[in-house]
Amino acid sequence: MIANDYSAPAMAPAAAVGRAVALAERLPMGLPLLLARIGIAAVFFRSGLTKLANWMLTVQLFKDEYRVPLLPADIAAYLATFSELVFPAFIIAGLATRFAALPLLGMTIVIQLFVYPSSWVDHAMWAALLTLLIARGAGTLSLDHLIRRRFSA
Image (tube, rainbow, N blue to C red; front, side):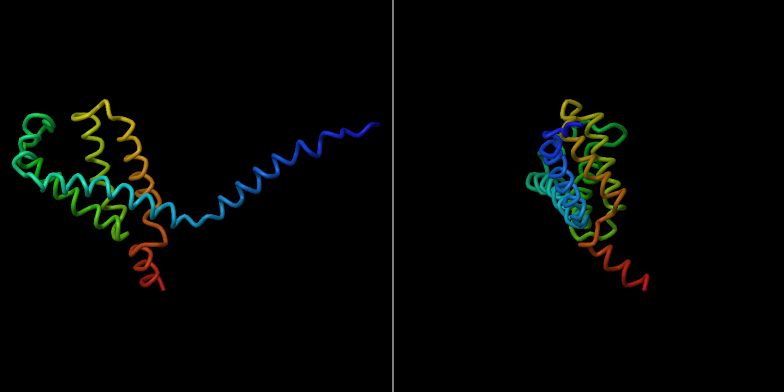
């Protein structure tokens, strides 16, 4: 029987891909979770700072453009600004991360459904990051992890 001379080189790319995947799987989840926390917190925190910069314009936007259902514009503006400034701070610190991500995910859903439905790509990215944090928590580079280690010992 004649040996196939092409079998060894054909396996080389598959082996290289396998090694790359194995290397990627050894990446500690704390790092991507930290990056997810920083990225999503920055989006909401910057939005909160923008609202504070011109409060009268913010309330006017909630009245004329955002039109959040069930809430008066001024109440919605206060709640949104509070949420965008407080919950990202918790997420950055990795403190009560799962809890802090929930209202931001709720805001994302409201924004998608009632305010800017055509911006679904941005909202899908926000929801993916927030859902990851809800599902996995803040990771090892967080106050949540330190507290858990302290009280579980």
